[in-house]
Length: 319
Length: 189
Image 1 (cartoon, chains in turn green, orange):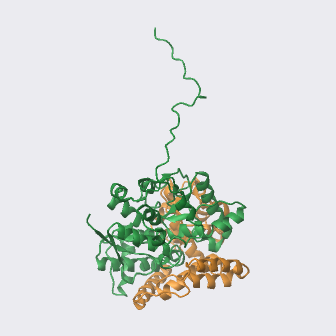
Image 2 (cartoon, each protein chain N blue to C red):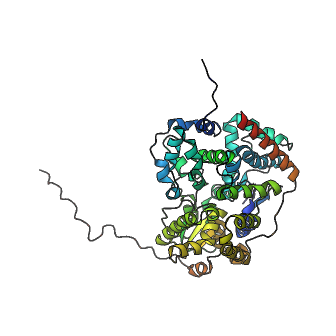
Image 3 (cartoon, rainbow over the protein chains, first blue to last red):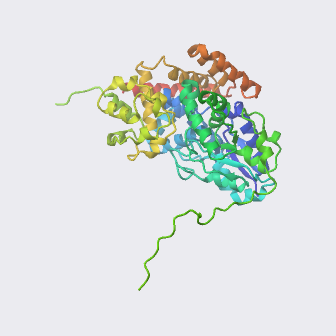
């Protein structure tokens, strides 16, 4: 297999708070012969905060990264965080769509001797790049420890599903569902797969945040999921670190670990839990590993016609 | 005869939002509020905010907690039958509320501002600093409980006590200062 190389924008969260995600990304990339070249001297994307304060500097902050990426010329720019992905993608797109905005952003970049021609850098989310470029067939072939017996809920969250539907449907994408199936897991139907995790609300209005977190863990647990699989450090943070607080607030005791999708891939590729930084999560993964079986569970087919079903209507006899 | 009038809040909001003028064709259908995960906590649903904004009830709009409860999930934006960029309009209303002094001391605005402060200083966000500076100032009574979350994060090796900075900080500062200057000019125009 030929090795692939990408520019990589890890984002602030992966530096420490969600370092497990970074560890898993690097481990899985090495295993899949993907080279992730870190964008040199990248800066924060501003998350959802800078656009609240001042629009133009918020665009300029993101555009510096795009200009650096264009200069470094290392292929598509991959972001593992949904907020980083959206800010980078949206800034590129808005600059292309609104030339007056692009002119102003470039005037600001000029003060730092940079320039960005919109459309030069292709911004992608890590998940999409793995699925599209490596492909599910090849992934399936590389699985050494299929995740038989694990019931997983694919949780996409907001910012890669919306507002730009790069993952297909903005309401019910299926890209990650197919990935998890390829790893041997059983993917449960999860109706809140693109529902918001609460974002920064844990810091501003806890009760609103707990309500959103609680809806998600309740829906996942009731769908039969052993774990949620996330693709964004913010989603993982809220579902993991605040799960206990949300449970206390609603007097429930749901227990739904939230894994990063590369941790799930790594596990199926046969990597050891420490290679994937297991143990940094608040809601433990330990029971999940125990649950993996050696053979796929027997498929229970529903009967074609339940016995209690209404009889078929009698057709009038042909004359 | 043409009279020179200062632009209304409505005009300012739609002018400074990409595609903001689509708000002109809002149907008042309420799909936005129905799709909103935090709509229950809002004083006005997004539909109501847009009705107030169009009718010139500027004070009610700027005082409302609605944009501050927007979690930026874009559920309304993708469902809006008129393709109005609702989430982006909420960002603009927040900027206007801060610029006009309505929300400048409010916790939600302070959180964003504290976050941005670290980014402007170092080029990276800094959670430990953000949490301590923001919560000690705004939620001193909750600080003990939040401190427990912080300790737990430290125990799981998920909290850095020292900030990281980018190398070319002068370059970023020059870019941001220039952008702020241009934004201030935009505001005056």
